[in-house]
Image 1 (cartoon, rainbow, N blue to C red):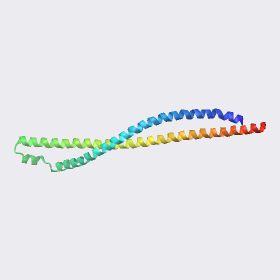
Image 2: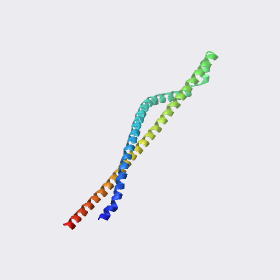
Image 3: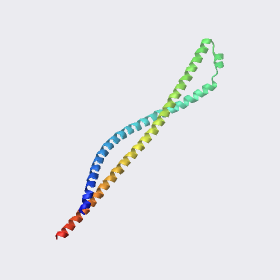
Length: 173
């Protein structure tokens, strides 16, 4: 029995040392994961704010797209020419209409780009959050497994020591 105890004792001591190191690492990792989680919560709040802002902008976008479409279908330079009293009025009207259309196209592009970025940010956020949760779960599982193994070997060594004590007591008595 003593030989078995002597054979297991170094492995048990090594496992206990590894468990202590792992626990230190876990504390550090959990602190970093906590920081990452805080950043994710800030990002989530930012995404929600952006969603609300873009909800309003989405409505404005739909109105601008509709208006741009209607103007492009109705607009006729010939009608503007016929309705103008002078060449300068005609030129000014054409310029104003082109500027309005260009502004509408620019705003539509900006809002569409922001909506696209928001969608990408949400996907990235969800992937990061699920990955973080997976890492936390894996870390807890590994630490739990090692703790159980150390406990099992410790219990087994205690049982062996107890049996050894019993045998020594029987031998002596």
